[in-house]
Length: 342
Image (cartoon, rainbow, N blue to C red; front, side, top):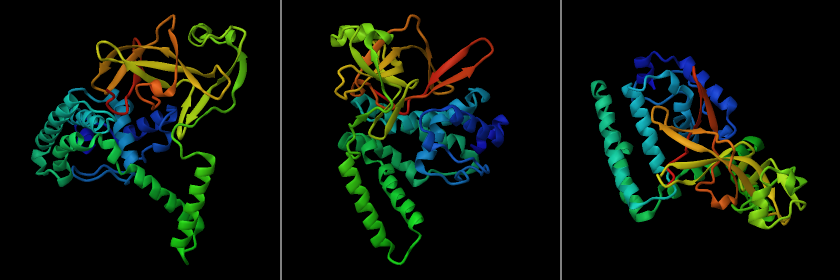
Protein backbone atom coordinates (compact mmCIF):
# COMPACT_ATOMS: atom_id res chain seq x y z
CA UNK A 1 0.00 0.00 0.00
CA UNK A 2 2.86 2.37 0.81
CA UNK A 3 4.53 1.87 -2.58
CA UNK A 4 1.20 2.17 -4.40
CA UNK A 5 0.45 5.55 -2.86
CA UNK A 6 4.00 6.77 -3.38
CA UNK A 7 4.00 5.87 -7.09
CA UNK A 8 0.50 6.96 -8.06
CA UNK A 9 -0.08 9.94 -5.78
CA UNK A 10 -3.04 8.13 -4.24
CA UNK A 11 -3.79 9.59 -0.82
CA UNK A 12 -4.75 7.73 2.30
CA UNK A 13 -7.93 9.79 2.48
CA UNK A 14 -8.92 8.61 -1.02
CA UNK A 15 -8.34 4.97 -0.08
CA UNK A 16 -10.42 5.24 3.10
CA UNK A 17 -13.22 7.18 1.38
CA UNK A 18 -13.34 4.64 -1.45
CA UNK A 19 -13.60 1.74 0.99
CA UNK A 20 -16.24 3.51 3.10
CA UNK A 21 -18.27 4.42 0.02
CA UNK A 22 -18.13 0.84 -1.25
CA UNK A 23 -19.20 -0.66 2.07
CA UNK A 24 -21.98 1.88 2.34
CA UNK A 25 -23.55 0.41 -0.80
CA UNK A 26 -22.68 -3.24 -0.28
CA UNK A 27 -25.30 -5.76 0.77
CA UNK A 28 -22.89 -8.63 1.46
CA UNK A 29 -19.90 -8.91 3.83
CA UNK A 30 -21.14 -5.92 5.82
CA UNK A 31 -19.74 -7.35 9.06
CA UNK A 32 -16.24 -7.73 7.55
CA UNK A 33 -15.65 -4.05 6.84
CA UNK A 34 -11.94 -3.21 7.23
CA UNK A 35 -10.88 -0.66 9.78
CA UNK A 36 -10.00 2.82 8.56
CA UNK A 37 -6.29 2.91 7.77
CA UNK A 38 -4.67 5.45 10.06
CA UNK A 39 -1.12 5.53 8.70
CA UNK A 40 0.93 4.20 5.83
CA UNK A 41 4.07 2.43 7.00
CA UNK A 42 7.24 1.59 5.15
CA UNK A 43 7.37 -1.63 3.08
CA UNK A 44 7.62 -4.86 5.12
CA UNK A 45 5.49 -3.31 7.90
CA UNK A 46 1.85 -4.16 8.54
CA UNK A 47 -1.12 -1.86 8.02
CA UNK A 48 -2.21 0.27 10.97
CA UNK A 49 -4.45 -0.33 12.78
CA UNK A 50 -4.24 -4.08 13.08
CA UNK A 51 -7.30 -5.98 11.82
CA UNK A 52 -8.76 -9.45 11.94
CA UNK A 53 -7.80 -11.95 9.24
CA UNK A 54 -11.27 -11.79 7.68
CA UNK A 55 -10.97 -7.98 7.46
CA UNK A 56 -7.61 -8.21 5.67
CA UNK A 57 -9.15 -10.70 3.26
CA UNK A 58 -12.14 -8.42 2.63
CA UNK A 59 -9.84 -5.43 2.07
CA UNK A 60 -7.80 -7.32 -0.53
CA UNK A 61 -10.95 -8.66 -2.17
CA UNK A 62 -12.75 -5.35 -2.64
CA UNK A 63 -9.91 -2.82 -2.84
CA UNK A 64 -9.69 -3.11 -6.67
CA UNK A 65 -13.37 -2.17 -6.91
CA UNK A 66 -12.97 0.70 -4.44
CA UNK A 67 -9.96 2.48 -5.98
CA UNK A 68 -9.20 0.62 -9.22
CA UNK A 69 -10.54 3.42 -11.41
CA UNK A 70 -8.01 5.88 -9.88
CA UNK A 71 -4.90 3.75 -10.37
CA UNK A 72 -2.95 3.40 -13.66
CA UNK A 73 -3.29 -0.16 -14.88
CA UNK A 74 0.43 -0.38 -15.71
CA UNK A 75 1.64 0.54 -12.23
CA UNK A 76 3.98 -2.17 -10.92
CA UNK A 77 2.61 -2.04 -7.36
CA UNK A 78 -0.96 -2.32 -8.64
CA UNK A 79 -0.03 -5.26 -10.85
CA UNK A 80 1.53 -6.97 -7.84
CA UNK A 81 -1.63 -6.43 -5.76
CA UNK A 82 -3.82 -7.87 -8.55
CA UNK A 83 -1.48 -10.84 -8.85
CA UNK A 84 -1.82 -11.36 -5.09
CA UNK A 85 -5.62 -11.34 -5.56
CA UNK A 86 -5.24 -14.12 -8.12
CA UNK A 87 -3.08 -16.19 -5.77
CA UNK A 88 -5.43 -15.74 -2.81
CA UNK A 89 -8.41 -16.71 -5.01
CA UNK A 90 -6.66 -19.97 -5.86
CA UNK A 91 -5.63 -20.69 -2.27
CA UNK A 92 -9.21 -20.32 -0.99
CA UNK A 93 -10.79 -22.32 -3.82
CA UNK A 94 -13.26 -24.91 -2.46
CA UNK A 95 -12.53 -27.39 -5.27
CA UNK A 96 -9.37 -28.24 -7.19
CA UNK A 97 -8.44 -30.06 -10.36
CA UNK A 98 -4.97 -31.36 -11.11
CA UNK A 99 -4.50 -28.57 -13.63
CA UNK A 100 -5.44 -25.96 -11.02
CA UNK A 101 -2.78 -27.32 -8.66
CA UNK A 102 -0.12 -27.00 -11.36
CA UNK A 103 -1.34 -23.52 -12.18
CA UNK A 104 -1.19 -22.52 -8.50
CA UNK A 105 2.45 -23.66 -8.40
CA UNK A 106 3.27 -21.36 -11.31
CA UNK A 107 1.35 -18.43 -9.79
CA UNK A 108 3.11 -18.92 -6.44
CA UNK A 109 6.55 -18.91 -8.06
CA UNK A 110 5.67 -15.83 -10.08
CA UNK A 111 4.33 -14.07 -6.97
CA UNK A 112 7.56 -14.61 -5.04
CA UNK A 113 9.62 -13.49 -8.02
CA UNK A 114 7.54 -10.31 -8.39
CA UNK A 115 7.90 -9.58 -4.69
CA UNK A 116 11.69 -9.82 -4.85
CA UNK A 117 11.87 -7.67 -7.97
CA UNK A 118 9.54 -5.07 -6.49
CA UNK A 119 11.40 -4.70 -3.19
CA UNK A 120 14.97 -5.46 -4.24
CA UNK A 121 15.95 -1.82 -3.80
CA UNK A 122 14.52 -1.78 -0.26
CA UNK A 123 16.65 -4.77 0.81
CA UNK A 124 13.53 -6.67 1.94
CA UNK A 125 13.80 -10.44 2.06
CA UNK A 126 11.15 -13.11 1.89
CA UNK A 127 9.59 -14.06 5.18
CA UNK A 128 9.28 -17.71 6.27
CA UNK A 129 5.49 -17.62 5.72
CA UNK A 130 6.02 -16.50 2.14
CA UNK A 131 8.52 -19.27 1.51
CA UNK A 132 6.01 -21.82 2.85
CA UNK A 133 3.69 -20.91 -0.05
CA UNK A 134 5.66 -23.22 -2.33
CA UNK A 135 4.43 -26.22 -0.29
CA UNK A 136 0.71 -25.44 -0.64
CA UNK A 137 0.18 -27.21 -4.00
CA UNK A 138 1.62 -30.43 -2.55
CA UNK A 139 -0.63 -30.11 0.51
CA UNK A 140 -3.65 -29.73 -1.75
CA UNK A 141 -2.76 -32.93 -3.60
CA UNK A 142 -2.35 -34.86 -0.34
CA UNK A 143 -5.06 -33.35 1.87
CA UNK A 144 -7.57 -31.58 -0.35
CA UNK A 145 -8.62 -27.89 -0.56
CA UNK A 146 -6.88 -25.58 1.87
CA UNK A 147 -10.12 -23.87 2.90
CA UNK A 148 -10.90 -26.96 4.99
CA UNK A 149 -7.75 -26.29 7.04
CA UNK A 150 -8.31 -22.57 7.53
CA UNK A 151 -7.91 -21.20 11.07
CA UNK A 152 -10.65 -18.58 10.58
CA UNK A 153 -13.38 -20.84 11.92
CA UNK A 154 -11.35 -21.56 15.02
CA UNK A 155 -10.76 -17.86 15.55
CA UNK A 156 -14.52 -17.36 15.23
CA UNK A 157 -14.97 -19.71 18.17
CA UNK A 158 -12.51 -17.57 20.15
CA UNK A 159 -14.66 -14.51 19.50
CA UNK A 160 -17.52 -16.13 21.47
CA UNK A 161 -15.34 -16.38 24.58
CA UNK A 162 -14.01 -12.83 24.13
CA UNK A 163 -17.52 -11.40 23.92
CA UNK A 164 -18.67 -13.45 26.88
CA UNK A 165 -15.74 -12.36 29.03
CA UNK A 166 -16.42 -8.73 28.12
CA UNK A 167 -20.09 -9.00 29.04
CA UNK A 168 -19.55 -10.94 32.26
CA UNK A 169 -16.73 -8.70 33.53
CA UNK A 170 -16.16 -11.03 36.49
CA UNK A 171 -12.80 -12.76 36.69
CA UNK A 172 -13.18 -14.59 39.99
CA UNK A 173 -13.55 -17.90 38.16
CA UNK A 174 -13.74 -16.84 34.54
CA UNK A 175 -12.89 -20.30 33.13
CA UNK A 176 -15.87 -21.89 34.87
CA UNK A 177 -18.16 -19.05 33.75
CA UNK A 178 -17.08 -19.29 30.12
CA UNK A 179 -17.44 -23.07 30.10
CA UNK A 180 -20.97 -22.76 31.53
CA UNK A 181 -21.91 -20.07 28.98
CA UNK A 182 -20.56 -22.21 26.15
CA UNK A 183 -22.59 -25.22 27.32
CA UNK A 184 -25.72 -23.07 27.34
CA UNK A 185 -24.96 -21.81 23.84
CA UNK A 186 -24.34 -25.35 22.56
CA UNK A 187 -27.61 -26.56 24.07
CA UNK A 188 -29.51 -23.68 22.47
CA UNK A 189 -27.95 -24.45 19.09
CA UNK A 190 -28.89 -28.11 19.45
CA UNK A 191 -32.51 -27.44 20.42
CA UNK A 192 -33.04 -24.73 17.76
CA UNK A 193 -31.20 -26.64 14.97
CA UNK A 194 -29.04 -23.58 14.26
CA UNK A 195 -25.99 -25.83 14.12
CA UNK A 196 -27.31 -27.47 10.95
CA UNK A 197 -25.86 -25.97 7.79
CA UNK A 198 -28.80 -26.83 5.52
CA UNK A 199 -31.70 -25.26 7.42
CA UNK A 200 -33.58 -22.92 5.05
CA UNK A 201 -35.89 -20.25 6.42
CA UNK A 202 -37.69 -17.26 4.93
CA UNK A 203 -39.26 -14.52 7.03
CA UNK A 204 -42.11 -12.24 6.09
CA UNK A 205 -43.41 -14.27 3.15
CA UNK A 206 -46.70 -13.55 1.43
CA UNK A 207 -49.19 -15.86 -0.28
CA UNK A 208 -49.88 -15.08 -3.93
CA UNK A 209 -51.39 -16.72 -6.97
CA UNK A 210 -48.83 -18.21 -9.32
CA UNK A 211 -49.96 -16.02 -12.22
CA UNK A 212 -49.03 -12.86 -10.28
CA UNK A 213 -45.27 -13.50 -10.43
CA UNK A 214 -43.23 -12.89 -13.63
CA UNK A 215 -41.85 -16.44 -13.61
CA UNK A 216 -45.24 -18.15 -13.61
CA UNK A 217 -44.41 -20.05 -16.81
CA UNK A 218 -41.37 -21.59 -15.14
CA UNK A 219 -43.43 -22.75 -12.17
CA UNK A 220 -46.09 -24.23 -14.45
CA UNK A 221 -43.61 -26.11 -16.65
CA UNK A 222 -41.16 -27.18 -13.94
CA UNK A 223 -43.50 -27.99 -11.07
CA UNK A 224 -46.82 -28.63 -12.81
CA UNK A 225 -48.62 -25.83 -11.00
CA UNK A 226 -51.77 -24.20 -12.29
CA UNK A 227 -51.74 -20.39 -12.69
CA UNK A 228 -54.40 -20.16 -9.98
CA UNK A 229 -52.45 -22.18 -7.39
CA UNK A 230 -51.23 -20.41 -4.28
CA UNK A 231 -47.49 -20.02 -3.68
CA UNK A 232 -45.41 -18.39 -0.93
CA UNK A 233 -43.08 -15.56 -2.00
CA UNK A 234 -40.41 -13.81 0.09
CA UNK A 235 -37.71 -11.17 -0.40
CA UNK A 236 -35.22 -12.62 2.10
CA UNK A 237 -34.02 -16.12 2.85
CA UNK A 238 -31.31 -17.57 5.08
CA UNK A 239 -29.49 -20.88 4.88
CA UNK A 240 -27.81 -21.43 8.25
CA UNK A 241 -25.82 -18.19 8.72
CA UNK A 242 -25.82 -17.13 5.04
CA UNK A 243 -28.33 -14.39 4.26
CA UNK A 244 -29.75 -14.02 0.76
CA UNK A 245 -31.66 -10.90 -0.29
CA UNK A 246 -33.60 -9.91 -3.35
CA UNK A 247 -31.12 -8.16 -5.64
CA UNK A 248 -28.13 -10.31 -4.72
CA UNK A 249 -26.25 -12.05 -7.50
CA UNK A 250 -25.25 -15.71 -7.70
CA UNK A 251 -22.85 -17.62 -9.89
CA UNK A 252 -25.03 -20.19 -11.65
CA UNK A 253 -22.53 -22.21 -13.69
CA UNK A 254 -19.90 -21.86 -16.40
CA UNK A 255 -20.73 -21.70 -20.07
CA UNK A 256 -19.11 -23.70 -22.89
CA UNK A 257 -16.24 -21.19 -23.06
CA UNK A 258 -15.50 -21.45 -19.35
CA UNK A 259 -16.89 -18.01 -18.49
CA UNK A 260 -19.07 -17.74 -15.37
CA UNK A 261 -22.81 -17.28 -15.79
CA UNK A 262 -24.38 -14.95 -13.21
CA UNK A 263 -27.97 -14.46 -12.16
CA UNK A 264 -29.80 -11.80 -10.19
CA UNK A 265 -32.15 -12.96 -7.44
CA UNK A 266 -35.66 -11.62 -8.07
CA UNK A 267 -37.61 -13.65 -5.50
CA UNK A 268 -37.69 -16.64 -3.18
CA UNK A 269 -40.59 -18.96 -3.72
CA UNK A 270 -42.12 -22.03 -2.09
CA UNK A 271 -44.38 -23.61 -4.71
CA UNK A 272 -45.50 -26.64 -2.70
CA UNK A 273 -46.13 -24.96 0.64
CA UNK A 274 -44.11 -27.58 2.53
CA UNK A 275 -41.33 -25.20 3.59
CA UNK A 276 -39.02 -25.99 0.66
CA UNK A 277 -37.74 -22.65 -0.63
CA UNK A 278 -36.35 -22.07 -4.11
CA UNK A 279 -34.59 -19.10 -5.69
CA UNK A 280 -35.84 -17.37 -8.84
CA UNK A 281 -33.02 -15.66 -10.76
CA UNK A 282 -32.67 -13.64 -13.94
CA UNK A 283 -29.82 -14.75 -16.20
CA UNK A 284 -27.32 -12.03 -17.08
CA UNK A 285 -24.68 -11.97 -19.79
CA UNK A 286 -20.97 -11.91 -18.91
CA UNK A 287 -19.16 -9.73 -21.41
CA UNK A 288 -15.59 -9.40 -20.13
CA UNK A 289 -13.14 -9.82 -17.30
CA UNK A 290 -11.41 -6.56 -16.40
CA UNK A 291 -7.99 -7.56 -15.15
CA UNK A 292 -7.16 -4.05 -13.88
CA UNK A 293 -9.93 -4.33 -11.25
CA UNK A 294 -10.12 -8.13 -11.05
CA UNK A 295 -13.85 -8.30 -11.71
CA UNK A 296 -16.34 -9.54 -14.32
CA UNK A 297 -18.52 -7.15 -16.27
CA UNK A 298 -22.13 -8.14 -16.91
CA UNK A 299 -24.99 -6.68 -18.93
CA UNK A 300 -28.69 -7.09 -18.29
CA UNK A 301 -30.46 -8.96 -21.07
CA UNK A 302 -33.95 -7.98 -22.24
CA UNK A 303 -36.22 -9.85 -22.22
CA UNK A 304 -34.82 -11.58 -19.16
CA UNK A 305 -34.61 -15.36 -18.90
CA UNK A 306 -35.79 -16.57 -15.48
CA UNK A 307 -34.96 -19.91 -13.87
CA UNK A 308 -35.75 -21.43 -10.50
CA UNK A 309 -32.92 -23.06 -8.53
CA UNK A 310 -32.42 -24.89 -5.29
CA UNK A 311 -29.58 -23.34 -3.27
CA UNK A 312 -27.52 -26.52 -3.65
CA UNK A 313 -27.68 -26.22 -7.45
CA UNK A 314 -25.64 -23.01 -7.62
CA UNK A 315 -22.00 -23.26 -8.62
CA UNK A 316 -21.26 -21.43 -5.38
CA UNK A 317 -23.56 -20.61 -2.47
CA UNK A 318 -22.01 -17.26 -1.56
CA UNK A 319 -24.08 -14.21 -2.63
CA UNK A 320 -22.32 -11.53 -4.66
CA UNK A 321 -22.51 -7.75 -4.71
CA UNK A 322 -22.89 -5.95 -8.04
CA UNK A 323 -20.83 -2.76 -8.08
CA UNK A 324 -21.79 0.04 -10.47
CA UNK A 325 -18.84 1.94 -11.90
CA UNK A 326 -19.97 5.09 -13.67
CA UNK A 327 -18.00 6.27 -16.70
CA UNK A 328 -18.30 9.09 -19.17
CA UNK A 329 -20.24 7.11 -21.77
CA UNK A 330 -21.49 4.01 -19.97
CA UNK A 331 -22.01 2.30 -16.65
CA UNK A 332 -20.26 -0.94 -15.81
CA UNK A 333 -21.84 -3.59 -13.61
CA UNK A 334 -19.02 -5.47 -11.93
CA UNK A 335 -19.03 -8.72 -9.99
CA UNK A 336 -16.08 -9.89 -7.92
CA UNK A 337 -15.86 -13.63 -7.23
CA UNK A 338 -14.71 -14.36 -3.65
CA UNK A 339 -12.34 -17.12 -4.81
CA UNK A 340 -11.69 -19.28 -7.84
CA UNK A 341 -14.75 -21.40 -8.64
CA UNK A 342 -14.18 -24.29 -11.01
